[in-house]
Length: 191
Figure 1: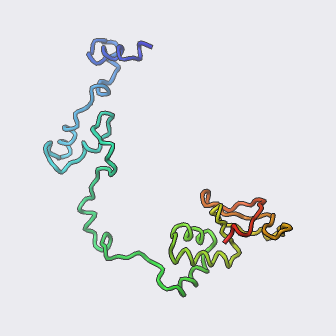
Figure 2 (figure 1 turned 90 degrees about the vertical axis):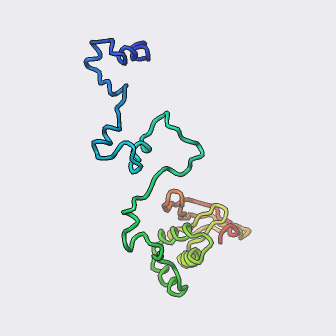
């Protein structure tokens, strides 16, 4: 174990062990001067234009735990592209409820689920809710998931008329897939 410890590394650093030092790359432990590399790239040593040394990671780098934003900058050439990074460009949006209802009716179920979960508390969520209801999907308030009856099986209604047991297709928003399972459904738990 001693040959892999720090005591075995000291003779290599001091170049005392001629046998090992002939096959060992000393730049691995002694490091390399990056200023010569920057100079060969045409960047002066004291230039404010280069930020190369800020991007190198090291266990001894001085960082604050309160730093949330990484250090970066946007090159000026990226900000001067006409028609790309300008604030007057608005993203497409839903603006007319009648047109939007017609458009929402064309979407597949998965797209409607995406819109429902992506836009909480908006008109888009209400429109997708109404469209999913038209397609016999019901929202379970406790499970916070959508479900629909399996068309091949008829559920059995309980004697009190407050619930039914049957096979249902659930949409799982975590795995983003439809899955089928037997379930006891209480009517007051769905919307």
